Image (cartoon, rainbow, N blue to C red; front, side):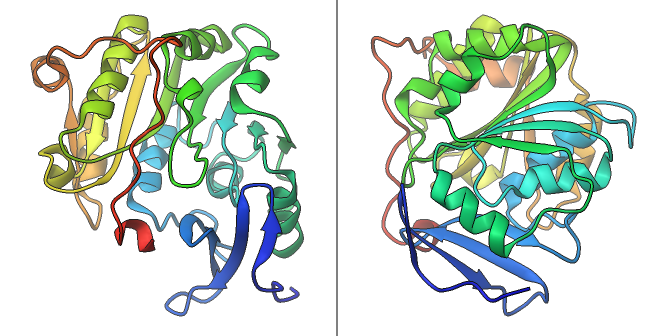
Length: 279
């Protein structure tokens, strides 16, 4: 493959692809200095970022191992999870909404997708793209969207989640990356929003982040069907940085008095403190 050209202007700022000195064949995508994605071209099933690995567990448990899925990815970056699914669940049909078309061109040129991967990337706002999708057309929807280092406000609301629920098939699963830090006000609001729309919700998080000791990424998971909580717990406990699965009464306590977020009062996720995520 040709070597990436160095910093490149994209719609969202300046993007750069850096080789991972500790892992041959691996690359890190940074946008304005913030790590956005990690890709192992030799082993697309390798997930470097801890929160991405947790979403990977959700995907692993969404159906019988190896069975193809219809998946919607809101936010593309370097297409880490689409590559993962193309490898672990061959034949999966994947739709990606990534608003930054120059970024996608950079990624596809220098980090080519696996052969025979059924991945279609559309240059569109995530919520607008979701609104054009057919009802009950996806087994899984994944949201991992950042403008800079923050999730846009319009992707955090009950109205947005209602569109997610509409696109999911009965028994489908939603997974969302939620970036937050003390006092976790944003994360609590996101959980409250999901609990108002789905019968079953859980949260995957590293204990220090969950206790409000540090800024980090939590993964919210929701479905109208029961979630595989025991299997998720085992998978998360085996990770290099183990995480907890919070559900039931514990999730109720975590949510506290938080109320669902609406389009009228939505705010973007908090700005990470200086030094977090390499910033």
